[in-house]
Length: 189
Image (cartoon, rainbow, N blue to C red; front, side):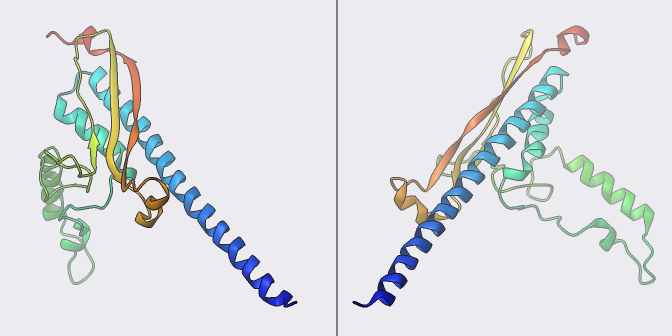
């Protein structure tokens, strides 16, 4: 009998199983990480709502907290400001730098592709686009509940979807946070 061929086949089967296990664990890690980011983001959304901030600020607070699971950076202002205002001698034009920094800070609250923007921060997305979902609730209740989820998040490896009933994208379960509504104590509505 030829034992060398059997050993190679057994080794290849074991290596295939180990690789599959590794890729499944990576996919589970991505899912768990996205779930934790949704929990973290929901806390910041609840905190902003409890302090009485406007809806745009609440959404922006939740989005910034969820940057780790928001896909690729699609904003156009990726070049650091220091590089734009650095002179030939290496010094920075502070007046121009501060002016541009103030403009970026003002534009941050505007929904635009020219400011901070990520792939899942879609405005008016279709049902198949990955999107960070932040429903806004009532601000007049004693307890604020904030929910953040990621809808249609793509899997790490699309080839792995054949083993999961051809699922190409998954919905990450919502992260939910409850908080006492402090805004009722100091805001007149």
